[in-house]
Image (cartoon, rainbow, N blue to C red):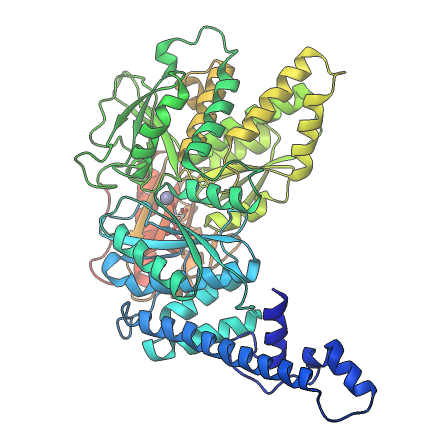
Length: 612
Ligand code: NG1
Ligand code: ZN
């Protein structure tokens, strides 16, 4: 380590790996033999010093050669992953996402970027190859920061910069990032890689591996894992095992142990209560659920459908389909009143549902999940006598009824952020306990370090009474069951199942906590969705002129109504959301607002048609 530092300073290799003029405060001059020579005022070098200078020069030459060779390798290998000329993509709310055929160069370059990020943070970085709930033909990539969180905004910018560099300026852009961030290229790098089940994922994750190895980074390829599993691995690695062991087995063990602890004292749980129908979206979540089943020792009896053995990924199934279409997935054999849930394509989202005796479909989305979990946690805090602040973080898509219930009935603080998990995650970090969920079912709970410490201390406190002890033990197991790095369908499912069991609630009881306002989500295609600019956590459109006024006057025509529009971060569309007192009103308002977007924001193709 010392010798590399020495050479770096001596040679004046800047952090971008380019050569600058030798630095005046050359570390060679602090070498003791040189100091002695100077002390004697002798300008000639002793043979010893000459040998040192000679060997330093040799080492400098070999370092220079190595550096050149390193970038030479990037240059050579990048030719095997060429960028289609003119193609520009942006690192959006969920990384890069588009048709898989456009992504090979992006993957190689994200391998390069993850290596730089690893050198910069001196930690392991994750790269997940997935396009989540998008169609099977798409793919995508997301970078995972050291604690398992999303990469920072500045690095999202670098990702876009690197992704869009034409072939001949790739090295220049790479060196620009190295220089801006002052990255020491002699630092080692370690990158964890995972992929979902899409046919394109194998070759695309190979391109990531190529990128990392061309910069000399080390890789650990986890192969097929869910997105949250990879986040968990990265966090385990960088916390040196204190979050858990960085293997899929370690993940199953940690979660199942916590689940079994939570449910072990629940009296008289019948097989019906233990039974859960799971739609795996024909994706990775189904595979991983199968692997996990033995660890749950029949305390949860999963009936898996859309397990990938025949159907297509996310096609007519999965959490996004169920949430947006507000209907059950295909391929699921639901009995009346049976508790069911759907994962999305990379198992970081979950929604629950059931059908009643009249054949009516009932959806329990991210808002209902946040309500169930925050109510349960609040109750446990009271029982344990812990004074910790709990808050729920939502987006504009949260159903108005959920916000009202949380604020007015539960007296829980509610905070609204822009769409995109990273915004919710950051907001949730501000509280002792931050429960965050997007309405689409992506979410988790964050416990601050101080909150976790208080819980652990109370567990050990021999002076607490039985009721308190019981409550705080439940809290402790709940902390262990939750994947705090990111929303996790498997972890969330186990938390929900445990909470329902502990509170003796059926899915119908849970659904009855509050009644959702009927709502509708639509998409409008416009020539450039960036013409829509929003404010107030995306609840108000600032541009184009006149759009917000039009929305306001349309909303006034309906009872209990609300509507907003925003450009999607993952699709080339404008999203329209509307809610009102009846389904007809919500549909009609959504349609009228769609027409306004089409008219005022440059709609293309056919005019939006009424829903009925
Ligand atoms: P966009 O396409 O920006 O609306 C969608 C979801 C987000 C988030 C991302 C990433 C909705 C309305 N939007 O973003 O909540 O999950 O995908 O997957 O559900
Ligand atoms: Zn997902």
